[in-house]
Length: 175
Ligand SMILES: COc1nc(N)nc2c1ncn2[C@H]1C[C@H](O)[C@@H](COP(=O)(O)OP(=O)(O)OP(=O)(O)O)O1
Image (cartoon, rainbow, N blue to C red; front, side, top):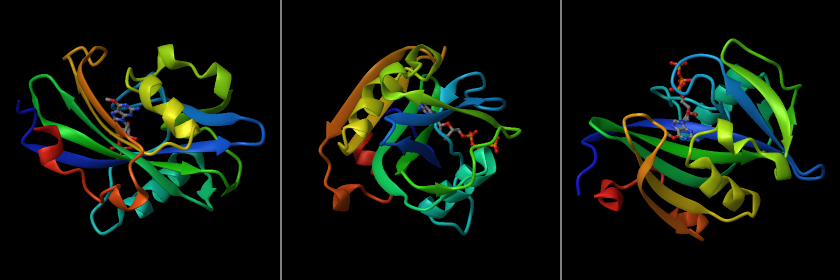
């Protein structure tokens, strides 16, 4: 089965307050995924590493500066009748400087781990966010229907070793 011919490189950052068992999410105010609640992130720009891109997006979208940043997973998102996939590298931040602030792109809000608003999020999130909260490393592929709501196909690998969280998702992994 062939899904895509190329992919864009993006990041997604989940900020956790482990002591209070809370996760910082934001309502996306514009662009792709508008109206959905998600972590913070976006496209990696030319000349920056994936982690630098993640740090920049967190600052731009929530006005906070990550102190720690740990890569916990990589997801490939593909869409029916779209040859371009989204390769999203996922990070967790537990310490940061600044106060989460609403920006032009995102409206941040803390949610209890037990009250994550999955019904207002992308359909894949309910699969891998619990893994992330459980410190489990993962690599997944989710193929969405054109309505961007239904997952037509999914493949998930868990307990990925840190060294094996590849810098780039290998195309062979989704073919
Ligand atoms: C399809 O499933 C997805 N699920 C989740 N949880 N997150 C996703 C999915 N698809 C994309 N994303 C994430 C990846 C990025 O963090 C954002 C999209 O970023 P965007 O396209 O808005 O990138 P920017 O560089 O911020 O865009 P601007 O050009 O508007 O600045 O969603």
